[in-house]
Structure formats: structure tokens, C-alpha cells
Length: 225
Image 1 (cartoon, rainbow, N blue to C red):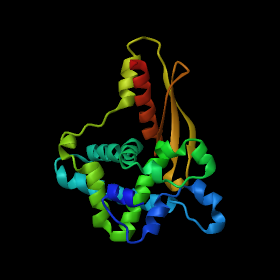
Image 2 (image 1 turned 90 degrees about the vertical axis):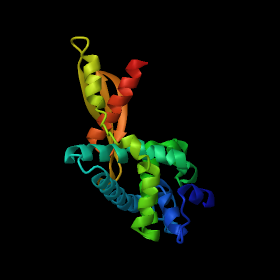
Image 3 (image 1 turned 90 degrees about the horizontal axis):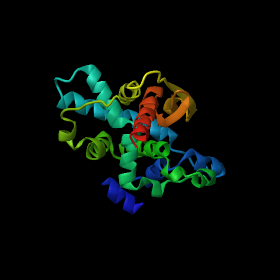
């Protein structure tokens, strides 16, 4: 845990909070008799801490940005792909506590599990040291490169994919919800995009729209290859 705390840039006073943040429901279920708690409640809290921190940052740094654009940029900054990148940089997967089945099925590298863990860690910091510490971590991992988002642009992969396939007549794109998992407050949706009925790409997201965008991005990459 000490190595992880060094990567996080913060040493916990109550390390049990960090351990809980890294505990997947599969591990808690397998060790229910021991009273081990999973990270889902922390994830719920961390999602809100993350959201308000990013919203505050955008409001203060971009006074002329309209509400709709701020909403799209916030979604892009806190999406599963963005949090997954943070988790990979922290090597967070190395520290997760997973059930045997989830471990066997590659859960340690699964984007949805890793992104949820990032939110849980944010909540653990918030509970251990307050909003300022949690916000400092969020700024360092997601917001410090201000120049990278001084001219923010939301990439609409669905529109790009539609424009690409419409270069040939008779092409039909469709999006299908193929699964969802997680509690009601933190669901992960899985969407498949098809071209003329044939699967072209899959994606996951916290909302169906986000999952569709991820699926479209993966489909674009497949077509360009």
C-alpha cells in the first residue's frame, strides 16, 4: 500500500478507507463472513466529489463557455475511458481485491472496475482528509494540463461514424444495448453498434449515450484499420 500511496501523492491516516476503496464486490461477497465491505458506497460518493470538482474547475477557468459545452466537456473528463487512463497510470489494478471468479475473468484489467476504483479512492481521500485533498488529486490527475483543454472540443464519434459509412449508399447503422451491470446508482452499460446488422464495435459507459459513443469510437478504429 505504501507504493500506491506514493503514486497517489497522499498517505492515509485511516488506511482501512483505502483498502475498502480497492475492494470489489466479488471479493466482499466471497468474504462476507469476515464483514468485509466493498467499494460501491465509496464509488457513489466519489462520483459526486469528482463531478463537483470538475464542474467548479470549468466554471472558474472558462467564464465564457456556455452551459452545454461545459456539460459535454465535464462528461468527457470524467468518463470511463478518462478514469481508466488514471487507473493505469497509478497501476491501480495491482492493488485491487477481487473474488476468484473476477480475477480469473480478467477483472484486474477491466476498465469498468478500474474506473470505479478511481472514484472510490477519491471518496476515501475525501473522507480521510477533506475536499481540498481530494480536489488536489483530481486536479493533478485530470485537470492540471489546462492548455490541453483551453480549446475544448467534444468528439462526437457517432456523427463521425455516420458520416463515414454514408459515403456509400444503403448503409444502416444501429445501436443495441447488450448488457448492464452494477447497482442502480452506478450502472455500467454495454452497447454494440452494427453496420447492416453485422457487429462493428462495442463500448461501455456510465450512460447509454456514453456507451454508444465508445462503441462508435471503437467501430471507427476498426473501419480505419
